[in-house]
Image (cartoon, rainbow, N blue to C red; front, side, top):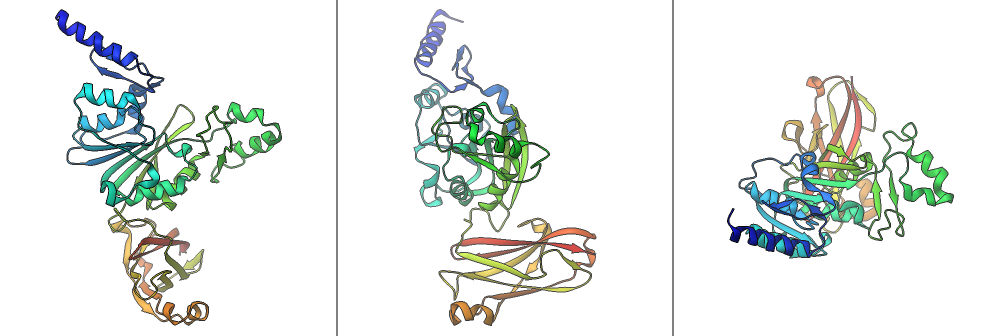
Amino acid sequence: MSNESQRSIEEIQARVDAIRWFHDWPLMPGVRTKGMSPMLERAPFFEIPEDLSGKRVLDIGCAEGFFAFVAESRGAEVVAIDSWPRQGFFLAREVLGSKVEFHHTSVYDLTADKLGLFDIVFCFGVYYHLKNPLLALERIASVTREWALIESEIMVSPPPPALKKRRGFMRFARRLLQPTSVPESPASYFYERDEFNGDPTNWWVPNIPCLLQTVRAAGFPRAEMVNTYQTSRGIVRAIKGPRTAANPLSEDVFVAIDVPAPHAEIAGPVEVTGWALSQLHPEDGVDHVWLYLDDLDAPQAELGKAELGSWRADQTVHFGDRYGACGYKLHWDPAAVPAGHHTLHALAKGKLGWNYRSVPVVVS
């Protein structure tokens, strides 16, 4: 290495050292960011594909941009957002000669109109900093075409040290976190003040079932754990299907399953019935209802498109004739379905988005 090259590296390192970093990684040969979070150790847990050629990626809460630059280096077109822009991101982008596009904005303001749609979305270390995580997840789902990775702090047992200072809450906390007490039940801690790590931006810390359920409830038909690491961190892959890709889940769309009833035993052909409507556009706000078995919005699990438009007098009693033609029906023969417990899903799509309802059934 020439003396000039060495001086250049030393100058870049000096600029790097003048900034306080969160991400720690070798920015280039001879230059390290010296942050508190060892990114090269953490990165393998995320299982990000080596080839992202042709993919459009969004990195939410990018901090200094480690994952954004990783995605770019693997062939992706990358947009990064953060509500607190860090000097380190802009220096790293300069040093790397990166084309990552940055927007100073909040996850709550994400819309396809503003930033477009993304094949893949990263949301790392953000969930537990959100006062309204479900709203944020809905925004994320609305701009996702394929899948998203959601990483968060998660509840563990025994309780974190911060909780031990809250004597009035301690007995309940220990009971709640015992593995034998709630091994599968969704739960989340809410921190009104800065009890968790002395950080006033920490609000919700979910356990794994809660993290998975909130991801699904926000508009991702499928959610699966990728990895847990460092005891109290969890990573979820949130997956879209062909009918929900880049479409928002909308509370305006309401769908119900009347037959079969929950936990009904099905021994032969059955007519699945229910109703679906748009609360704000009752005449034409819902245009399709599909039925799925076990995997929502998975082509291989589709049972068919329901016949829509059956008159429901029980709804007109409450809401009037404008809401009457909201019934649907589908003839389903489960002859080829393995005996056992299954979940029937109804997915309704309309002007303002989509929504779904699920019911457990037993095929005998």
